[in-house]
Image 1 (tube, rainbow, N blue to C red):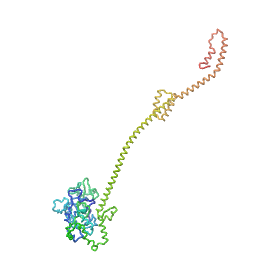
Image 2: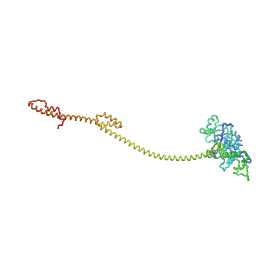
Image 3: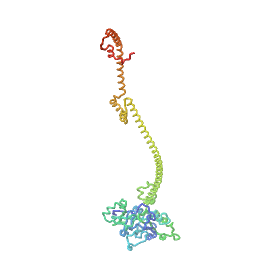
Image 4: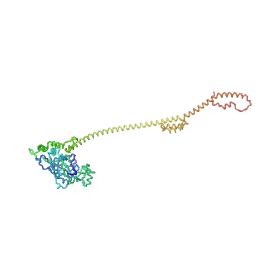
Length: 511
């Protein structure tokens, strides 16, 4: 077989009996209608066979895998389903039966239709197939199919069919939102457009969308049916695998009736199949085969159970169930963890709000303290500045003889000086105001007084000589007085007068 593409029309999403989409075209298929397509096989003589019928796909309606065929392709491939294998979950190594007939039926009811008499081929309709399951290959699955026909069983209509095709060409279909019928879509058949948009297909790893529309693959050309896989999760809108009614089985007991229990336990009448003398398989093969059968629908409880060998044998539904359980556990764990985190976040938020409120109060008090401290510092600085100014002015007053004008000028100059600046200022003043320096003036006065004192001492030392001179002068004056005649009129100053002029006694305190 040389086809470019193959597709298995199934997926791993569990599907309920009644679609959650509540599609107006979809209803639960009637097993009674499906039973009309069951092959006419003598089950009494061939107790190893289980005749079945099922809807394989819905024509003109896209499936969950993003694939679809139209009426023209359906008519071309219908009879090519005959003699193709029936397997479990599209595992070609696990063939359990064969297809024997192919028909068309109404979508939703599975009533048989004749396409040649149908007025429109654009509406959805089914490809319905009939075949047999080889019980000897997989007795457990055969029993499960029988149980799925029992309305009282939890497994009622849990088994469905999913087709597999091989093909080389396809076109694209664009549909709005939840629309599935291709008659309401846009068909893209241009090769360049197909090449451009194909990467968007889910089958090619895309997201299945172009802008706001969904993109699907419409299989065309030389299409080859490759068989049917029985599955718990069909991709198409199909449901159920029908077996014959008990009235049609031609089985009888002493009362010529078969109970539901006997129908489901039909393997009790097939012991001949299990007799080692009546089969060509060895005990080793039987054990191996039984192990495979048990694993097909086994319950996987640990991810370590999923091995390469198991994947070759186990049904996809088992893996799906495991994944669903793990997702459920993870979801529950996530909810618990999320609740814990939410509570922790809430508590942290409340604590944060409390701390924020307290912090705001502390901040407010701190701002008040800062303002008070700043004011005190300003007052302190002003006081220190004032004290420094007063000390400096006092120093200037102490060092220099200042008047009010001097003080006014000096106060203006020193009010904003720091210590270093004031020291430089005082150095400059020592030069400019040396004439007003009190210490210098006092020293000058002291020096003058000292000089005057020295002069006074010198005068005192000469006072003895003066006395003698005076006495001499007096004596001389007496002699002169005696010798001078009364008639003398001379005007020459006397010696006393000369002395008086030479030595003024006004500055002397003679005791």
